[in-house]
Image (tube, rainbow, N blue to C red; front, top):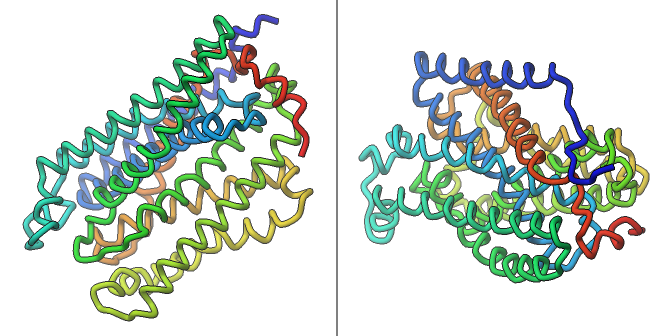
Length: 387
């Protein structure tokens, strides 16, 4: 078999279903603009930030594997590499919100009087400049990592791996700073009177565990075809299951750290964030957020057999993706809708469209290179890997 041939051929009906789902998302947003414009723009930010997070997790996972010298993941590295193709679509959505509906942010609409550093940081031209800079940095690093990886398919030179190792070490530091600031800019500044110093870490934990869930689902889907079926084994699934379990628990640790400190201090300017999200239906969703992102995955994935079971991993990964959607909903929608909860037809329709767009972007990225980096020097280590 020619390893440079794209051997996974999705059924034609899949493309039609994905386009239909994207259409549902667009229709839901248009209907929202006509009925509840603020909520529609907030929902666009939610699904766009989700797409950005999925794309960033792909490039971050690849960078971490290079920086740590982790050869076990080489066999399926093309999956997270292709996930980064979703980043441009998410960037367009985020920038559209920032450019065309800044009124969603109280400070931009003039509802909040900013002083001192807040006035300097939440300055609209500087705010937009930072957003463009974040995306330029992420897209550049992602493109360079993918380019070096795919060039290695042509000549098998170790030089490309060394370049990616050096690039990844820098990317880890740059990503940590830029993603933290982006989370503060685009989400936390929806409530400029509220501040949390670990909000960026909280968003990273949610982003990464959801991205791991997406990698697992995509890998299990693609494992039905050759050569992925021959190159990915149960040992790889076991390690991904361990990472899913670990980062789900890390998300809960950061969630509890933020909540406990604010609850214990009981200061009005801090507790207002959680008071808004623990009233009525939002209170039920607040508890469901913990159950979906940590409670059920923690209990189910405790055993070794569960981490090695495709059925269990599929169900837990899907559950965590639903939990990530709910987590973003609770971060973004309540301050825009002032805590009012209605049937989330708009958010669900747009999320369906975003997921379909993500799969389409992933497949487009996956077609650009062989399914497996067959000339990577660490591939043999990955194929013979055992826990």
